[in-house]
Image 1 (cartoon, rainbow over the protein chains, first blue to last red):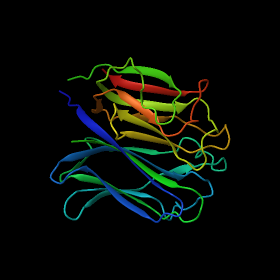
Image 2: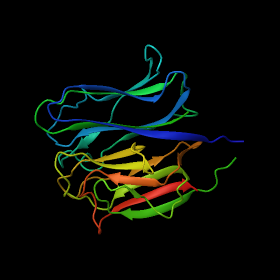
Image 3: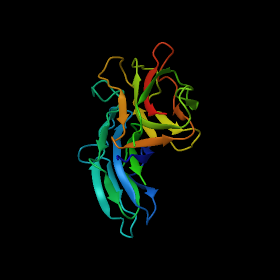
Image 4: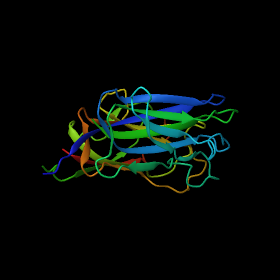
Length: 141
Length: 124
């Protein structure tokens, strides 16, 4: 008999206005002591103004999937896909922000002591509008 | 156990900013959501500059979206394009309890003639 798992999804969106400093923010998915399974996630980041190059390959946004133990053990870290630059000169990035949808093979990754999603964004100096980072995360508890 | 066959709802949406609506009133409130696609039928240039335009999905009136799609304002109407697609892993589903709803953060993302085309894959 096949089991089907009821999953949940949460959308975590951060936006930094122009001249904002770096961001480091964590969102709790499941508290310490809870078993939670990471099933899939979707990543994107970008700038509304095409001349804003504060997110780069050398300074990308990152997502970390961490346990809720005392040291917030890091299980998975990835740079967040960069795409949404609002201009024709960046073909492919101007309209629908390209995103990376990742599916964990098999039953997923088990977090045996809670889970949080930590997102970091570089500083956004200058006057070229906001930048954003987005993580849609699908998990089962 | 089998979840049964998947049903599909295809709708055209022309949303206004911050106006929460059901994706399709003919879909039951309580469904097992297994996928969706959201696509523009034309790239519009009328959106606000330097604003991230977001299409968000909710379970009913929840204040917390469970999915977000970001659209940057384009400067031309013809550029490369693909719809946003999400499918759950084969052995899972997202339970929607209070009606699959959506909301956009800005006007100008679609029009009557060129709406969003949304497909919802679900098991009722």
